[in-house]
Image (cartoon, rainbow, N blue to C red):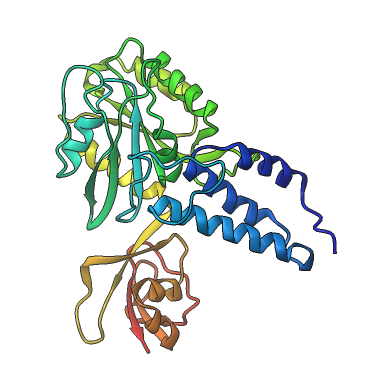
Amino acid sequence: MPANLPPQYYELERAFKEEQDINEKLRMAEELHRIMPKHKGTYKLQAEMKTKISKLKKLIAGGGEKVHGAKNAPTHDHVEKEGAAQIIIIGAPNAGKSSLVDAMTHAKPLVADYPYSTREPLTGMALNDTVQLQLIDTPPISPDLFESYMNSLIRNADIVLLVADLASETMVADVEFILNALEEKRVLLKKDNLEKADDPKFSYKNTVICAHKSFEDEDGTKQVELAKLFPDFKIVATSILDEESLVQLQVVLFEATGKMRIYTKPIGHDPDYKDPIIIPVNGTVSDAAYALHRDIAEKLKFAKVWGEGKFDGQKVQPDFVLGYKDIVEFHV
């Protein structure tokens, strides 16, 4: 039986063979497997691709044999994900990335008034209403510096936070350079996670724009320029002197994940507000049960739900769609 592979498969396969970045090579292999038709004619091809994916994962993890055409991963090219989402912070020199991480997390990056003080990734956990978001501070992107590992970090992250310095006279040029540099690396920043790549060689990244040092933009002209560069994007004006703006930034970042909080209530007890379950927006009772424990999901008979638009203790089935901050009591 012929394989009948789509034209984009062969194009992506050529790019896969030429790619030197190990994490990007893995992404391409997984995409090749995804777009491959699943029938008897591709059984062997599917098996071969699964083997390549497995070898690439082992290589990234530090084990397994060397894969032809792939270089060993640089020291900083992968950060293990933690929390509800991994958010990579990018920007020009002195844009204020490190000061944001310092203000929103317990991490202690080097915050200095000279450029290029950040030379390697640094992670910190921001707490947004009991939900942890992992922030990654990174070296700047400029004509003088674009660390080789940055491409892999950006592709692996769930959300990109692009920090634009409203106090800089070169803000527009700095941001435009970053956009062009990323496009050369086949990374495109997009306004939400609904936009999908037309070309599988490209990685579309859900992006939030941080209009930082907002107090320096007294007449608002820089924010207007930024809005023209990023129409329809989520843009949040921030200052480390304005705690409310930092809280708002965390709220927008969590909303960008496309997830929501769900609270659990043990039978006969009060709800647990300290440790929410995180599920996709429009997720079901069953999704929440699986997020809590597989055994609960498999034994689940029904649930009782409290929340907006519901009467207290409403009895629902596993396929019931939950709302933001609903309280769920599982019955098995």
